Length: 505
Ligand code: NAD
Image (cartoon, rainbow, N blue to C red; front, top):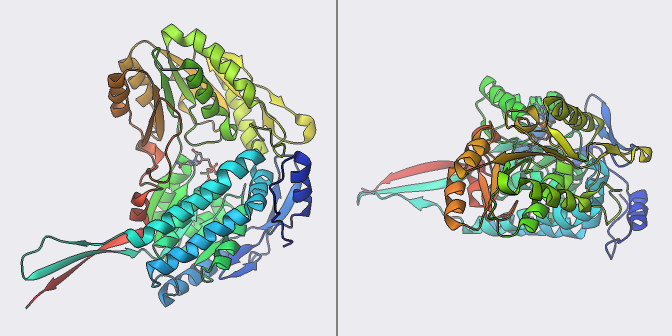
């Protein structure tokens, strides 16, 4: 690969385009330290939603490649070349990995933008640093995690220790390809496991690059493998594999349920799931700053083109301010108009692929057919570019039972629902199969805490949207998943607890 690392970050669309023209893109799987095509010789096209161009042919891995990667991962694990290294060693290597991600930040950001359509300014300012931060934070923690001694009688010692679970398969989505991968690979590698990462077929390019950077940092061959390919082929093969000890997943609730079945049909591998959401953003009339609340409500549905698991897709507004608030949010959405993803001024990029765009348009049609009022957006735009763009869209007069309010759209489509009391807001907010995130805006401390406690969601934000950092566990209640990413709690997924009991003569 030509070295696309440049001394300064490009700051115009032309700079980014020039860098894109120089990129040589790797589409092969990374298995046991080498790049290789799928054993069956099959490939698929990585097509950019920015302009419809083919970026690369990508290995379409299947069962045979899964077997190879699992054998490599198991071999590396058993040899102890990583799993039995001191935590300080793994820490040093992972810190170098984080540095390399930062050093290759322009290249990685560009790959992410070209592959899945997000604005380059976000890929560069959010996705790259967040990925490096996840790896660095976790690396720094790993030599500070202690075991326990049980409260034993005088003649006994009970030691409780954590051991790596073994071979971890990580299946991730396309909306934040690198960040979602980093939330899995950082704690998995830090705790000494061998990893096989399966990126989404819609966004495989950065994962393939990350594996090479990890090895450059000192992760031994076979410890971090990447298998691009489809869910129903290589994803399924990993999920059913008898020698994968742990399956970690971020993606839709329907696939998450299928993975639990696969685990039951095979070796009862541990399954940890981060799934979908339909998060309520509750604005009381006494919110401290309605303009700020509206700006964040707009960002909560338009950032990353609404392709966010925690998108604030149900906006619950107290009736007394509903009309005023809709004016504010329509105004705030003016800063979220779709634009060319390589233009650094763009805030709203392209939708990942035609299927996802069709799905969003279908839901906009459904909303109108259900009787909701379209008050903003709703149209495909910039079609002449060959790219896939849609206006951020707002529906007013939505009932929580409508499909646009109960089903995850995964696009920039906001449902505004009115409420008259805190009790009603809480009831509407919790009336969903999901429980990933929620927000509440109020100046009243009691209302804030009462509502936050009553909300059945893994993350609750008060007077802002989408807060938290690596110190906060992230995951869902109900059908949004199980287990937690980020924070020290993430280590629970990647370790087995062992009780070693000693009798003293
Ligand atoms: P998806 O479920 O379609 O795919 C996710 C991954 O699973 C992909 O890599 C896909 O190839 C793979 N897959 C699909 N079918 C499979 C099968 N039968 N066996 C094994 N693997 C299979 O989800 P998506 O469209 O990529 O991403 C969008 C979804 O991800 C949304 O529902 C969103 O809410 C969710 N998401 C959740 C979080 C979270 O942390 N909770 C974060 C980001 C995205």
